[in-house]
Image (cartoon, rainbow, N blue to C red; front, side):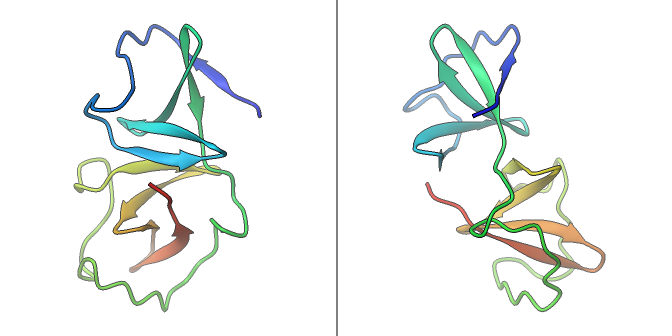
Length: 113
């Protein structure tokens, strides 16, 4: 797996650290201000979800999610955890990823907690 080391990260991620965690490639990553952090030895790796069959990056204008109304707009302060996915950012809504697209949200697949 390719990864990038997050420089100067003093926070220790783990159970009860205050950051939401998700399952990713057989391990647990922690969502921290738009990043997916994975503790690894004495440092923290930056991860991102790959575009895959489980988490596609396609437009789904007929996505009928009822977790929020259609006027909600995802962004840095929308209240949903953000997840790096492929070359963009998605937002966790319920148990799946939303990607803002025009006047709707695309469904980019389920997320495991």
